[in-house]
Length: 458
Image 1 (cartoon, one colour):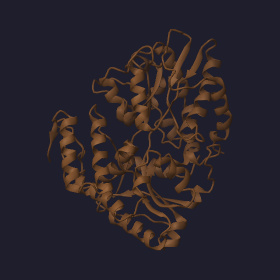
Image 2 (cartoon, helix red, strand yellow; image 1 turned 90 degrees about the vertical axis):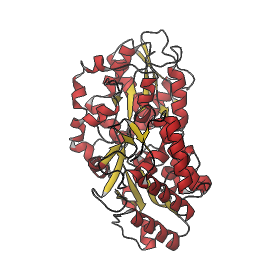
Image 3 (cartoon, rainbow, N blue to C red; image 1 turned 30 degrees about the vertical axis):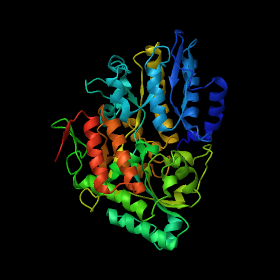
Image 4 (tube, helix red, strand yellow; image 1 turned 135 degrees about the vertical axis):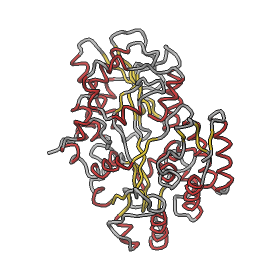
Protein backbone atom coordinates (compact mmCIF):
# COMPACT_ATOMS: atom_id res chain seq x y z
CA UNK A 1 0.00 0.00 0.00
CA UNK A 2 1.22 3.52 -0.69
CA UNK A 3 2.68 5.36 2.27
CA UNK A 4 0.42 8.16 3.49
CA UNK A 5 2.65 10.24 5.74
CA UNK A 6 -0.06 12.74 6.55
CA UNK A 7 -1.37 10.25 9.08
CA UNK A 8 1.51 11.20 11.38
CA UNK A 9 1.45 14.93 10.71
CA UNK A 10 -0.53 15.92 13.85
CA UNK A 11 2.01 14.25 16.14
CA UNK A 12 4.89 15.78 14.20
CA UNK A 13 3.25 19.15 14.54
CA UNK A 14 3.17 18.74 18.30
CA UNK A 15 6.88 17.99 18.22
CA UNK A 16 7.52 21.12 16.19
CA UNK A 17 5.59 23.45 18.42
CA UNK A 18 6.95 21.96 21.62
CA UNK A 19 10.55 21.85 20.45
CA UNK A 20 10.89 25.39 19.18
CA UNK A 21 9.75 28.86 20.09
CA UNK A 22 8.72 29.68 16.57
CA UNK A 23 8.31 33.35 15.92
CA UNK A 24 8.86 35.21 12.69
CA UNK A 25 10.85 37.89 14.45
CA UNK A 26 13.59 35.54 15.69
CA UNK A 27 15.86 35.45 12.65
CA UNK A 28 19.60 35.53 12.57
CA UNK A 29 21.87 32.56 12.13
CA UNK A 30 23.95 33.99 14.96
CA UNK A 31 27.30 32.69 16.08
CA UNK A 32 26.37 29.21 17.31
CA UNK A 33 28.18 26.86 14.89
CA UNK A 34 26.09 23.92 16.04
CA UNK A 35 22.63 25.38 15.34
CA UNK A 36 21.04 25.74 11.91
CA UNK A 37 18.23 28.29 11.68
CA UNK A 38 15.55 27.72 9.07
CA UNK A 39 12.86 30.11 7.83
CA UNK A 40 9.82 29.09 5.82
CA UNK A 41 6.31 30.25 5.01
CA UNK A 42 3.85 29.11 7.64
CA UNK A 43 0.19 28.85 6.66
CA UNK A 44 -2.10 31.58 7.98
CA UNK A 45 -4.70 28.86 8.54
CA UNK A 46 -3.88 27.51 12.00
CA UNK A 47 -5.48 24.16 11.18
CA UNK A 48 -3.10 23.47 8.29
CA UNK A 49 0.52 22.93 9.20
CA UNK A 50 1.75 20.45 6.61
CA UNK A 51 5.16 22.08 6.33
CA UNK A 52 5.54 22.26 10.13
CA UNK A 53 4.87 18.57 10.49
CA UNK A 54 7.20 17.56 7.69
CA UNK A 55 10.06 19.73 8.96
CA UNK A 56 9.61 18.41 12.50
CA UNK A 57 10.25 14.91 11.19
CA UNK A 58 13.36 16.04 9.28
CA UNK A 59 14.64 17.87 12.38
CA UNK A 60 14.38 14.66 14.37
CA UNK A 61 16.27 12.70 11.70
CA UNK A 62 18.94 15.38 11.32
CA UNK A 63 19.66 15.78 15.01
CA UNK A 64 19.85 12.00 15.47
CA UNK A 65 22.30 11.65 12.57
CA UNK A 66 24.36 14.66 13.69
CA UNK A 67 24.87 14.45 17.48
CA UNK A 68 25.39 17.85 19.04
CA UNK A 69 23.79 19.73 16.14
CA UNK A 70 20.49 21.53 16.62
CA UNK A 71 17.75 22.80 14.33
CA UNK A 72 15.82 25.98 15.11
CA UNK A 73 12.81 26.99 13.04
CA UNK A 74 11.99 30.63 12.39
CA UNK A 75 8.68 30.47 10.49
CA UNK A 76 7.07 33.50 8.91
CA UNK A 77 3.30 33.35 9.29
CA UNK A 78 1.94 35.57 6.54
CA UNK A 79 0.15 35.61 3.19
CA UNK A 80 2.44 35.14 0.19
CA UNK A 81 3.04 38.82 -0.57
CA UNK A 82 3.88 39.64 3.06
CA UNK A 83 6.11 36.57 3.34
CA UNK A 84 8.28 37.77 0.47
CA UNK A 85 8.66 41.21 2.03
CA UNK A 86 9.50 39.90 5.50
CA UNK A 87 11.94 37.36 4.14
CA UNK A 88 13.82 39.95 2.12
CA UNK A 89 14.08 42.18 5.19
CA UNK A 90 15.65 39.29 7.11
CA UNK A 91 18.12 38.51 4.32
CA UNK A 92 19.62 42.01 4.32
CA UNK A 93 21.59 41.63 7.54
CA UNK A 94 23.82 38.96 9.05
CA UNK A 95 22.05 39.66 12.34
CA UNK A 96 18.70 38.49 10.99
CA UNK A 97 19.56 36.19 8.06
CA UNK A 98 18.72 32.53 8.78
CA UNK A 99 20.91 29.70 7.49
CA UNK A 100 18.27 28.27 5.17
CA UNK A 101 15.21 29.87 3.57
CA UNK A 102 12.23 28.78 1.49
CA UNK A 103 12.24 30.70 -1.80
CA UNK A 104 9.45 30.94 -4.36
CA UNK A 105 11.00 30.43 -7.81
CA UNK A 106 9.33 33.56 -9.14
CA UNK A 107 11.39 35.70 -6.74
CA UNK A 108 14.65 33.83 -6.70
CA UNK A 109 16.31 35.85 -9.47
CA UNK A 110 15.30 39.07 -7.78
CA UNK A 111 16.94 37.90 -4.56
CA UNK A 112 20.01 36.70 -6.47
CA UNK A 113 20.39 40.11 -8.12
CA UNK A 114 20.07 41.76 -4.71
CA UNK A 115 22.95 39.63 -3.46
CA UNK A 116 20.81 37.87 -0.85
CA UNK A 117 21.59 34.25 -1.83
CA UNK A 118 24.65 32.04 -1.96
CA UNK A 119 25.47 29.92 -5.06
CA UNK A 120 25.20 26.22 -4.24
CA UNK A 121 27.29 24.77 -7.07
CA UNK A 122 30.23 23.67 -4.85
CA UNK A 123 27.80 21.68 -2.70
CA UNK A 124 25.81 20.28 -5.63
CA UNK A 125 28.94 19.03 -7.39
CA UNK A 126 29.62 16.70 -4.45
CA UNK A 127 25.99 15.55 -4.00
CA UNK A 128 25.09 12.48 -6.14
CA UNK A 129 21.33 12.97 -5.61
CA UNK A 130 21.43 16.19 -7.65
CA UNK A 131 21.53 13.99 -10.77
CA UNK A 132 18.02 12.76 -9.93
CA UNK A 133 16.45 16.23 -10.32
CA UNK A 134 14.75 17.00 -13.63
CA UNK A 135 16.33 19.71 -15.78
CA UNK A 136 13.35 22.07 -15.77
CA UNK A 137 13.38 22.12 -11.97
CA UNK A 138 17.11 22.81 -11.93
CA UNK A 139 16.64 25.68 -14.38
CA UNK A 140 14.04 27.30 -12.13
CA UNK A 141 16.71 27.70 -9.44
CA UNK A 142 19.40 29.16 -11.70
CA UNK A 143 20.51 32.73 -11.84
CA UNK A 144 21.31 34.64 -15.00
CA UNK A 145 24.95 34.00 -14.16
CA UNK A 146 24.40 30.28 -14.73
CA UNK A 147 24.93 29.36 -11.09
CA UNK A 148 22.35 27.47 -9.04
CA UNK A 149 20.92 29.12 -5.95
CA UNK A 150 18.35 26.64 -4.67
CA UNK A 151 17.32 23.01 -4.39
CA UNK A 152 13.72 22.57 -5.59
CA UNK A 153 11.36 20.57 -3.40
CA UNK A 154 8.71 19.92 -6.04
CA UNK A 155 6.70 21.69 -8.67
CA UNK A 156 3.02 22.15 -9.40
CA UNK A 157 0.53 22.38 -12.24
CA UNK A 158 -2.87 24.00 -12.58
CA UNK A 159 -6.26 23.06 -13.96
CA UNK A 160 -10.00 23.21 -13.36
CA UNK A 161 -11.63 21.64 -10.32
CA UNK A 162 -15.41 21.25 -10.48
CA UNK A 163 -18.21 20.08 -8.21
CA UNK A 164 -19.94 17.02 -9.63
CA UNK A 165 -23.01 17.70 -7.48
CA UNK A 166 -23.39 21.26 -8.73
CA UNK A 167 -22.80 20.09 -12.29
CA UNK A 168 -25.52 17.44 -11.87
CA UNK A 169 -27.97 20.06 -10.59
CA UNK A 170 -27.07 22.32 -13.51
CA UNK A 171 -27.47 19.53 -16.06
CA UNK A 172 -23.78 19.58 -16.94
CA UNK A 173 -21.78 16.39 -17.62
CA UNK A 174 -19.90 14.62 -14.80
CA UNK A 175 -17.00 14.03 -17.19
CA UNK A 176 -16.81 17.68 -18.26
CA UNK A 177 -13.75 18.51 -20.38
CA UNK A 178 -14.06 22.01 -21.88
CA UNK A 179 -12.38 22.61 -25.23
CA UNK A 180 -12.37 26.43 -25.30
CA UNK A 181 -12.67 29.44 -22.98
CA UNK A 182 -16.25 29.83 -24.16
CA UNK A 183 -16.98 26.32 -22.90
CA UNK A 184 -15.77 27.36 -19.43
CA UNK A 185 -17.86 30.54 -19.44
CA UNK A 186 -20.91 28.70 -20.78
CA UNK A 187 -20.70 26.19 -17.93
CA UNK A 188 -20.41 29.03 -15.41
CA UNK A 189 -23.43 30.80 -16.92
CA UNK A 190 -25.43 27.58 -16.79
CA UNK A 191 -24.57 27.13 -13.11
CA UNK A 192 -25.59 30.72 -12.37
CA UNK A 193 -28.96 30.10 -14.00
CA UNK A 194 -29.70 26.60 -12.68
CA UNK A 195 -27.99 26.68 -9.26
CA UNK A 196 -28.21 30.36 -8.27
CA UNK A 197 -27.16 29.92 -4.63
CA UNK A 198 -23.54 28.98 -5.43
CA UNK A 199 -20.50 30.72 -6.92
CA UNK A 200 -20.23 29.52 -10.52
CA UNK A 201 -16.50 30.11 -11.09
CA UNK A 202 -13.55 31.28 -9.05
CA UNK A 203 -10.64 32.91 -10.86
CA UNK A 204 -8.21 34.75 -8.59
CA UNK A 205 -7.78 38.41 -9.35
CA UNK A 206 -6.24 41.66 -8.12
CA UNK A 207 -3.35 42.78 -5.95
CA UNK A 208 -4.59 41.40 -2.59
CA UNK A 209 -3.97 37.79 -3.67
CA UNK A 210 -0.69 38.63 -5.35
CA UNK A 211 0.98 36.03 -7.52
CA UNK A 212 -2.06 33.74 -7.31
CA UNK A 213 -3.93 36.23 -9.50
CA UNK A 214 -1.07 36.47 -11.99
CA UNK A 215 -0.24 32.80 -12.26
CA UNK A 216 -3.40 30.86 -11.41
CA UNK A 217 -5.63 33.05 -13.56
CA UNK A 218 -3.98 35.50 -15.92
CA UNK A 219 -1.06 33.42 -17.14
CA UNK A 220 -3.28 30.34 -17.42
CA UNK A 221 -5.26 32.45 -19.89
CA UNK A 222 -2.43 34.31 -21.62
CA UNK A 223 -0.31 31.22 -22.29
CA UNK A 224 -3.34 29.63 -23.92
CA UNK A 225 -3.85 32.40 -26.45
CA UNK A 226 -2.67 32.40 -30.04
CA UNK A 227 -0.21 35.13 -29.03
CA UNK A 228 1.71 32.49 -27.10
CA UNK A 229 2.24 30.02 -29.92
CA UNK A 230 5.87 28.93 -29.76
CA UNK A 231 6.93 32.16 -28.06
CA UNK A 232 6.67 33.44 -24.50
CA UNK A 233 3.87 36.05 -24.50
CA UNK A 234 5.44 38.00 -21.63
CA UNK A 235 9.16 37.99 -22.40
CA UNK A 236 11.06 37.96 -25.68
CA UNK A 237 14.19 35.88 -25.13
CA UNK A 238 15.76 36.88 -28.44
CA UNK A 239 15.81 40.59 -27.63
CA UNK A 240 15.82 40.08 -23.84
CA UNK A 241 12.91 42.49 -23.58
CA UNK A 242 9.43 42.31 -22.07
CA UNK A 243 6.45 42.13 -24.42
CA UNK A 244 3.88 44.91 -24.58
CA UNK A 245 0.19 44.10 -24.61
CA UNK A 246 -1.23 42.41 -27.68
CA UNK A 247 -4.51 40.74 -28.58
CA UNK A 248 -3.89 37.78 -26.28
CA UNK A 249 -3.19 40.02 -23.29
CA UNK A 250 -6.37 42.00 -23.88
CA UNK A 251 -8.43 38.84 -24.45
CA UNK A 252 -7.16 37.51 -21.11
CA UNK A 253 -8.24 40.72 -19.38
CA UNK A 254 -11.59 40.48 -21.15
CA UNK A 255 -12.12 36.97 -19.74
CA UNK A 256 -11.53 38.29 -16.21
CA UNK A 257 -13.82 41.24 -16.90
CA UNK A 258 -16.56 38.90 -18.10
CA UNK A 259 -16.36 36.69 -15.01
CA UNK A 260 -16.96 39.59 -12.65
CA UNK A 261 -19.16 41.78 -14.86
CA UNK A 262 -21.61 38.91 -15.36
CA UNK A 263 -21.36 37.95 -11.67
CA UNK A 264 -20.03 34.52 -12.51
CA UNK A 265 -17.37 34.80 -9.79
CA UNK A 266 -17.41 35.59 -6.07
CA UNK A 267 -18.62 38.98 -4.86
CA UNK A 268 -15.89 41.49 -5.60
CA UNK A 269 -15.14 42.12 -1.91
CA UNK A 270 -14.62 38.37 -1.46
CA UNK A 271 -12.54 38.08 -4.63
CA UNK A 272 -10.24 40.86 -3.37
CA UNK A 273 -9.89 39.37 0.11
CA UNK A 274 -6.24 38.32 0.70
CA UNK A 275 -7.54 35.13 2.36
CA UNK A 276 -9.79 34.07 -0.51
CA UNK A 277 -7.51 31.12 -1.29
CA UNK A 278 -8.15 29.69 2.17
CA UNK A 279 -11.90 30.12 1.65
CA UNK A 280 -11.78 28.27 -1.68
CA UNK A 281 -9.97 25.28 -0.20
CA UNK A 282 -11.43 25.24 3.28
CA UNK A 283 -14.98 26.41 2.73
CA UNK A 284 -16.37 26.92 -0.76
CA UNK A 285 -15.29 23.65 -2.38
CA UNK A 286 -15.81 21.30 0.60
CA UNK A 287 -19.19 22.86 1.45
CA UNK A 288 -20.50 22.71 -2.12
CA UNK A 289 -20.58 26.49 -2.57
CA UNK A 290 -18.38 26.70 -5.69
CA UNK A 291 -18.98 25.17 -9.11
CA UNK A 292 -15.62 25.58 -10.86
CA UNK A 293 -12.22 26.58 -9.45
CA UNK A 294 -9.27 27.51 -11.64
CA UNK A 295 -6.59 26.40 -9.21
CA UNK A 296 -3.57 24.28 -8.43
CA UNK A 297 -2.55 20.68 -7.95
CA UNK A 298 -1.83 21.22 -4.25
CA UNK A 299 -5.41 21.69 -3.02
CA UNK A 300 -5.81 18.17 -1.56
CA UNK A 301 -3.19 18.87 1.10
CA UNK A 302 -5.96 20.76 2.91
CA UNK A 303 -8.32 17.80 2.79
CA UNK A 304 -6.10 14.95 3.92
CA UNK A 305 -6.15 13.40 7.43
CA UNK A 306 -4.74 15.75 10.03
CA UNK A 307 -5.14 18.86 7.88
CA UNK A 308 -7.95 20.46 9.86
CA UNK A 309 -10.22 20.51 6.79
CA UNK A 310 -10.48 16.74 6.36
CA UNK A 311 -12.61 15.87 3.36
CA UNK A 312 -12.15 12.18 2.54
CA UNK A 313 -14.88 12.33 -0.11
CA UNK A 314 -13.18 14.99 -2.21
CA UNK A 315 -12.00 12.61 -4.93
CA UNK A 316 -15.58 11.38 -5.41
CA UNK A 317 -17.20 14.80 -5.22
CA UNK A 318 -14.81 16.78 -7.41
CA UNK A 319 -13.96 16.37 -11.08
CA UNK A 320 -10.78 17.51 -12.83
CA UNK A 321 -10.39 19.08 -16.25
CA UNK A 322 -7.48 20.65 -18.07
CA UNK A 323 -7.72 24.38 -18.75
CA UNK A 324 -8.32 24.65 -22.50
CA UNK A 325 -6.56 26.99 -24.87
CA UNK A 326 -8.58 30.02 -25.97
CA UNK A 327 -10.08 28.58 -29.14
CA UNK A 328 -9.08 24.96 -28.70
CA UNK A 329 -5.94 25.44 -30.78
CA UNK A 330 -3.03 23.03 -30.32
CA UNK A 331 -2.00 21.66 -27.90
CA UNK A 332 -5.58 22.05 -26.66
CA UNK A 333 -4.74 22.57 -23.00
CA UNK A 334 -2.50 24.77 -20.91
CA UNK A 335 -0.90 24.74 -17.49
CA UNK A 336 1.55 26.83 -15.53
CA UNK A 337 4.22 25.45 -13.23
CA UNK A 338 6.18 27.02 -10.46
CA UNK A 339 7.48 25.75 -7.20
CA UNK A 340 9.73 26.56 -4.30
CA UNK A 341 13.37 25.95 -3.50
CA UNK A 342 15.52 25.74 -0.40
CA UNK A 343 18.23 28.38 -0.58
CA UNK A 344 21.13 29.47 1.61
CA UNK A 345 21.36 33.21 2.31
CA UNK A 346 24.59 34.96 1.37
CA UNK A 347 24.87 36.12 4.99
CA UNK A 348 24.11 32.76 6.57
CA UNK A 349 26.34 31.96 9.53
CA UNK A 350 26.29 28.18 9.04
CA UNK A 351 25.96 27.44 5.30
CA UNK A 352 27.64 24.02 5.45
CA UNK A 353 25.27 22.83 8.15
CA UNK A 354 22.35 24.26 6.20
CA UNK A 355 23.21 22.19 3.14
CA UNK A 356 23.52 19.07 5.28
CA UNK A 357 19.93 19.73 6.36
CA UNK A 358 18.91 20.07 2.69
CA UNK A 359 20.49 16.70 1.93
CA UNK A 360 18.48 15.15 4.75
CA UNK A 361 15.26 16.71 3.42
CA UNK A 362 15.97 15.59 -0.11
CA UNK A 363 16.63 11.89 0.21
CA UNK A 364 14.32 9.92 -2.06
CA UNK A 365 12.21 8.74 0.87
CA UNK A 366 11.86 12.19 2.46
CA UNK A 367 11.23 13.94 -0.86
CA UNK A 368 8.52 11.42 -1.70
CA UNK A 369 6.95 11.92 1.73
CA UNK A 370 6.84 15.67 1.11
CA UNK A 371 5.39 15.44 -2.40
CA UNK A 372 2.55 13.30 -1.12
CA UNK A 373 1.88 15.33 2.03
CA UNK A 374 1.97 18.60 0.08
CA UNK A 375 0.07 17.26 -2.96
CA UNK A 376 3.10 18.31 -4.99
CA UNK A 377 4.49 17.16 -8.31
CA UNK A 378 7.77 15.26 -8.11
CA UNK A 379 10.95 16.83 -9.47
CA UNK A 380 13.08 13.80 -8.62
CA UNK A 381 13.07 11.20 -11.40
CA UNK A 382 13.33 8.27 -9.00
CA UNK A 383 10.23 9.44 -7.12
CA UNK A 384 8.23 10.14 -10.29
CA UNK A 385 8.96 6.59 -11.46
CA UNK A 386 7.82 5.04 -8.16
CA UNK A 387 4.27 3.58 -8.37
CA UNK A 388 3.78 4.35 -4.68
CA UNK A 389 4.00 8.07 -5.52
CA UNK A 390 1.65 7.95 -8.51
CA UNK A 391 -0.93 5.92 -6.60
CA UNK A 392 -0.67 7.71 -3.27
CA UNK A 393 -3.38 10.24 -3.96
CA UNK A 394 -6.21 10.70 -6.46
CA UNK A 395 -5.36 13.38 -8.99
CA UNK A 396 -1.60 12.89 -8.84
CA UNK A 397 -1.46 11.30 -12.29
CA UNK A 398 -3.78 13.93 -13.79
CA UNK A 399 -1.65 16.84 -12.58
CA UNK A 400 1.64 15.09 -13.32
CA UNK A 401 0.50 14.49 -16.92
CA UNK A 402 -0.10 18.25 -17.30
CA UNK A 403 3.66 18.82 -17.05
CA UNK A 404 3.79 17.97 -20.78
CA UNK A 405 1.60 21.04 -21.50
CA UNK A 406 3.01 23.38 -18.90
CA UNK A 407 4.80 26.71 -19.04
CA UNK A 408 7.12 28.49 -16.63
CA UNK A 409 7.09 32.17 -15.76
CA UNK A 410 9.92 34.37 -17.07
CA UNK A 411 11.41 34.61 -13.59
CA UNK A 412 13.90 37.37 -14.33
CA UNK A 413 14.65 40.10 -11.77
CA UNK A 414 11.94 42.44 -13.10
CA UNK A 415 9.24 39.77 -12.97
CA UNK A 416 7.84 40.60 -9.50
CA UNK A 417 7.13 44.16 -10.63
CA UNK A 418 5.69 42.93 -13.93
CA UNK A 419 3.45 40.58 -11.98
CA UNK A 420 2.20 43.43 -9.80
CA UNK A 421 1.38 45.44 -12.93
CA UNK A 422 -0.67 42.49 -14.22
CA UNK A 423 -2.54 42.31 -10.91
CA UNK A 424 -3.35 46.02 -11.10
CA UNK A 425 -4.72 45.62 -14.63
CA UNK A 426 -6.80 42.64 -13.49
CA UNK A 427 -8.16 44.53 -10.52
CA UNK A 428 -9.15 47.44 -12.73
CA UNK A 429 -11.35 45.29 -14.96
CA UNK A 430 -12.64 43.25 -12.00
CA UNK A 431 -14.01 46.28 -10.19
CA UNK A 432 -15.15 47.94 -13.40
CA UNK A 433 -12.97 50.97 -12.72
CA UNK A 434 -11.14 50.40 -16.00
CA UNK A 435 -12.07 49.12 -19.43
CA UNK A 436 -9.89 46.42 -20.97
CA UNK A 437 -8.23 49.04 -23.19
CA UNK A 438 -7.54 51.35 -20.24
CA UNK A 439 -6.13 48.50 -18.14
CA UNK A 440 -3.91 47.40 -21.02
CA UNK A 441 -2.56 50.92 -21.51
CA UNK A 442 -1.91 51.17 -17.78
CA UNK A 443 -0.03 47.90 -17.88
CA UNK A 444 2.14 49.05 -20.78
CA UNK A 445 3.06 52.20 -18.87
CA UNK A 446 3.91 50.22 -15.74
CA UNK A 447 5.84 47.68 -17.80
CA UNK A 448 8.16 50.39 -19.07
CA UNK A 449 8.77 51.62 -15.54
CA UNK A 450 9.32 48.13 -14.14
CA UNK A 451 11.80 47.11 -16.84
CA UNK A 452 13.69 50.36 -17.47
CA UNK A 453 11.90 50.61 -20.79
CA UNK A 454 13.17 47.22 -21.98
CA UNK A 455 9.94 46.59 -23.89
CA UNK A 456 9.22 45.22 -27.34
CA UNK A 457 6.02 45.02 -29.38
CA UNK A 458 5.13 42.01 -31.48
